[in-house]
Amino acid sequence: MNFSYSAKAKEYIARLTDFMQAEVIPAEPLYYQQLNSSENPWIVPPVMTELKAKAKAAGLWNLFLPDEEFGAGLSNSDYAPLAEITGRSFIAPEIFNCNAPDTGNMEVLAQYGSAEQRERWLKPLLDGRIRSAFCMTEPEVASSDATNMRATARLDGDEVVINGRKWWSTGIGHPDCRFVIFMGLTDETAPKHAQHSMVIVPIDAKGLKIERMLPVFGELHPPYGHGEVSFTDVRVPAANIIAGPGRGFEIAQGRLGPGRIHHCMRTIGSAERALEMLCARALTRSAFGKKLAHLGGNGDVIANARIAIEQARLLTLKAAWMMDTVGIKGAMSEISQIKVVAPSVAQAVIDSAIQIHGGAGVLDDTHLTAMFANARVLRIADGPDEVHRGLIAKLELKKQAARLGLQP
Image (cartoon, rainbow, N blue to C red):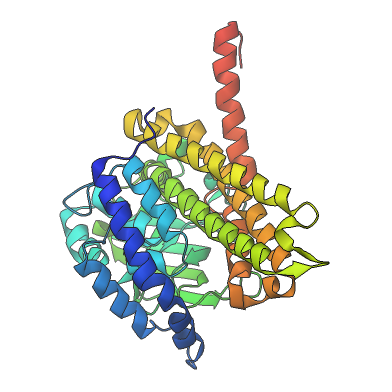
């Protein structure tokens, strides 16, 4: 493969980097000040609205969508370095309208949505006027195996009746969240991967209730948050089913491939920023007569962090390239590999940055604690490490068995 970026990607990299340095990073303190000084933290800080308008005017908007009708027309390989750049700041993805789960929901609606669904839900998402959530994981079952799903989306004439309980519905606390995409059982008698449907459910639908917002390591993460949501005889038009009944698994697989590239590259961007902070601290603080950079094994820590980040980046770029050239099915092992590697690398690098900052590292002031929590959560979100390792091993054994003429 060719690791050089296309001319189009290089242009976006330069423009996005400049915007991040001039507008986004300097605005972080004001963003958190506005968010934390409000009695109600579930707000959109005014500076976010200002930055989104600037980003849209600069043409740095919907960069993740490969279809030029809806987005920037970038391939996975072209978008990957841009995701890394935005991953350096928690506030950056929304500024460029590239934040999850809206990215995945926009991809779903762009690829599978009807003309009516695109007009009513996709268009305002693309404009950044509304936000959305995704309701799949359930508290009663091990949701790493999606076939365990118990929530239902039953057809009843020209309506769908939805029942069940979901949690970790990220983004549902945002004041601009207007709908969720719900995945549930429609027909248990159908083949295993044709039983489920994805349905658009307005947030104000009768019977939909946000039971609570879920804290992660003690933080509720406003203004997005993660909700536990109950659905009790919620009725929506059958036209709200995306692509038709029974296609939920098909849509989920198409949604997760690009999303994992985005997650991993953003996580690598977070690791890069943590390494920069680690080095800055190590070069400006002294103990026992030496700079921290030259004390004990800190040189090895820095070297190992650089090596790990480079390895994770190259593997993720390879996965993106394979998605562009052979498709998601041909890149399944590589996609799972990066999902295991990138969060673990980021967690280790951020942990080292926390350690070298000492007491300052465990304060929220540096945002290292939030960076660490995000990396740790990603080892569970979008499939836990164990599930991805299982798939990697299965594909590897199949390949090796074929080579040896054996049964896997």
